[in-house]
Image (cartoon, rainbow, N blue to C red; front, side, top):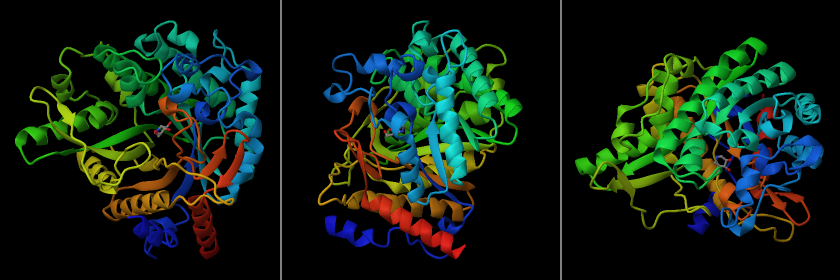
Length: 459
Ligand code: IFM
């Protein structure tokens, strides 16, 4: 396997001449999120978030890591943006830290806002498109203290936050994304407790999801009113479930897996209903839905952001649900996730058939973690190079099948705080030495930069 991967390394970003990746209007970019890179947790009036609280609790994050310093991007943003533009990418996806820009009473924190204004201004000067996520999991702790996403009121507070941001930053943002991966916020945060705020109750998960989606739906018209030129969307992580056998029970299990991972979010957004099968899987967990909520949630989108990482092989649990059966002998990443680009292809072609209202798609995250080390000043991330090549080929295949995919963002620009796994798992195409904060381009970054330079020269 290792030899195969290095054989692929050199031509990784030389896609066939008819590939969409050569088109200048197909955006290639890199992505990050505030809590994972910014650090400066107490600077300039930033308030605590649920991840500050959660990561300080013993046993919640590997090695007791927190995002207090992270990549110190808050202080190093200028050199980080120079590094980003050296990659020759078209676009950058970042998130705003809600606790940095608004106080408990909803008033703006000017210092926090200025940070994003400067950052976005510099990105524009460099000619990069800006994709801005409003909520990438760092809920202000004072809102969690009032029930967090279990409290319907937080959806209204989110709409206020979207209002403030789009009034302040109108004209600096090409694409707004309301939420990143509501599945993770709802299920990992309130359903199994692996993420902040660490609650574990199935009923909580569905209610939190409802309020997240409601927050999204309320924010969309606000963003449209304040910043009509930009695109508006949301980002969903999607999971491929495959059946462990051809039995009807296992096929049903794989279907239920995808209901829980995909349809739970996409059906309300694109059809205005929750999938009934969800409540077969989790009986008695129907959220409280008020009149008009589903219409609000199904507000038309300009685009859908899709994050894809791996597949899960499942069998029936003998009752209402599914259970994972890990496959042997498959390639896995440092996360233990299977490398399975066909899953991205199959899910996207499936969504294109299922959802009449499917808007244009950006792949807003795709990438992998590996145990990367700097050796003689270089990082040879051969597995990542092969991973990116194969997933980009899958994207290309889907485009050829007629799915409207407008761009692809690698996760992530640089190694960062990988939530419950702390700093051990390295997703970056740029290596970060957390002792010195030195950044080193990995081989994948060098190849991306080389391809994009060649693409620009051909245009
Ligand atoms: O690091 C995360 C990111 O914050 C959200 N999507 C998945 C990534 C890898 O786990």
